[in-house]
Length: 359
Image 1 (cartoon, rainbow, N blue to C red):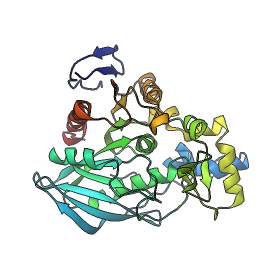
Image 2: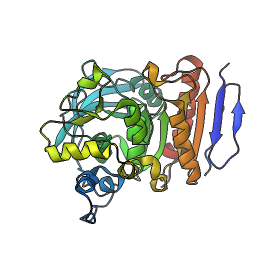
Image 3: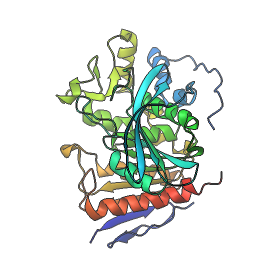
C-alpha cells in the first residue's frame, strides 16, 4: 500500500495511509511593461535588478512562433515533434507532443525538466513519462530544453532567470500551434524545473495551475548554500566537480563588473530576497500542488523534502490555494503505484483548473 502525507492550505493536516484520492484545492500575454528605472542604489543592486522578481516582471518578453524541426514518432495516443522557438534573440529547442484524438483545441501543459548533465541530455529527458500520461487525457505538452541544453543557444542565466525567460517566451509562442488553446495553460516542474516554475509563477499570471514535483527550493539562498554559485565561464564544470553550480550560466564574455555583482548578490541576503520567488507568493494567481518523496535527498542527486514543505508553508501563509503530498518511501523520481497515483492526482488537478477553466 502507498502511504501518503497530505496537507492543504487553509485546512487542517490530514494523514492518508491508503491509495490517495483527489482532494480539491481550497480555494493573453501580459501587456507590455512600462519603461522602469530602479531608484539609485548600489552598483551591485543596479546590475542585478534585471534578475530580481521585479526586474523580470518588467522584462520585455518576446513573441514568436514554434517551428517543427522534425517528427520523431506517432503513436495511437500522440505525435512527438522536435521544435525550436525564439527567446530574447536566442533559438531555443524542445519537444512538443500533440494528442492524436480529441477536440480541435487542446489545453497545454508546459513541462519544465530538472537538471541534467548537458553532454548526456536528450530533448524530453525528465518529462517524457509525464507528458505521455497527460497526452492520453487530452493535453498538448511542451518541454523547453532551456538555453544551453539540447541544441539551444547559450546565453546568460543568473538564478534561473534565463530559464524562466525561455519558458515564458515558450508560452508566448503557444498561439502559433493550431491545435492549442492559449487561454488554457498549466505548468509542471520537476526538481530544477520546479525552481523555474516558481519563478515563472511570480512573473506571469497566465498559468492556470501548477504542479511541483520533487522541487528544489524556491529560496535561492538554499541552493547557493548547498551547490554554490554558477561556474564562471564553463557550464560543464559543475558536472564534474562540486566547486560550482552549472545550472546557472555565467559566460566569460560578460563584463567583470557584472560577474562580480553576480558573485556579490549570491551572498547578499537582501538581494536574494528580491530574487527568490518564495518571498513573493502574493504575486501568484495559480493554485498549486506540491508532491515530494519522503526519501528524496541531494545526496542521491535529488532535493530536500523540506524545500517542498517550505514552499507549501509560504503559500499557506499568503492564503494561497496549495496542497502538499508526501509519498512515503519514494525518492526523487517516483515509481510503481506512487507514480501512477501522483500522475492521476496531477491529471485531475489540471482537469479542474486548466481543462475546465472558463476564465
